[in-house]
Image 1 (spheres, rainbow, N blue to C red):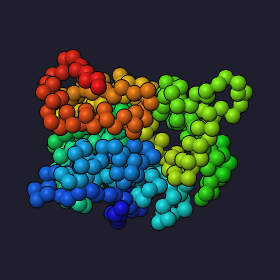
Image 2: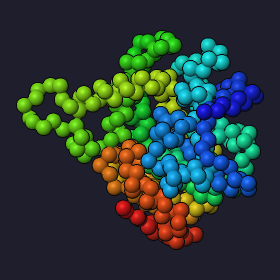
Image 3: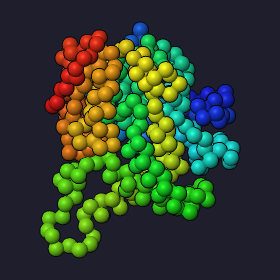
Image 4: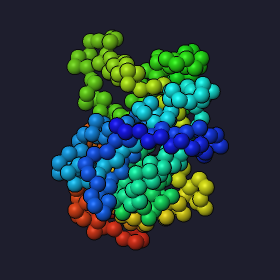
Length: 353
């Protein structure tokens, strides 16, 4: 992991300022002579810059993110706890730490990506890809600088965050705020709240059928200590060990802020700016980012094709169904899906694997 330090004051969309910016990023592969082989990955809410760690199923020889062919960049978002400026950054004044960290939006995350790309002297990016919150970033960046990219891949994401998604995020923040150590803004505070918040989040990331397949007790004689209960506790504890409560608060608010039409004539006008080849991928059982949201994007984007992952694992399907996702990405790259692009996509073409 490398860190770029942007020493100038950064103006945030909310009106607040950060005195400087640290952007942690990782690269894989080698940049070719004409710099035409760049793939930029935008990660999801709790991800980090090491895409080979959290998306290993599409990284490697012969896969979409192949370091032998492409120069792959993934930057940790600001607000996170994995190296970029966030609520726990030691260099920040105390007045900006913890839950006093200023509101970060998806546009602010994109501004950091732009600063890093300019620092690395990468003017053109062959492909921009992101799932979930990463897809929100990718969509926003493509709308701001459509000429910077050749193709765009949006996975399990949307043009504006839904009231349902915002309600789930607020429920998680209520769990955090119920933790007195979080409210007190203690440096190590919020762990019990984060454990509860993660348990709530899992219910939106997964699906009824996924729990039925993996967490059902074999016999009906139990009256407590159910497998599903243990699973929620385990996942909460595991998350507390790797993530920070104040960053979770910050990034969930950033997700809520996502609306591509803000500052534009309309949402449709903002989407219409993205005149590059685009693949939009939905997950059949996703309740947090339902496929209607991806279908809407595919219908509105001028040069888009839609493909669907069939899965019982809900939103997390993009982290589970690697065989399907690799095939979709391979077909898009080879042109087998590209032939379905039209300048006026009157009806949606669905590819279900």
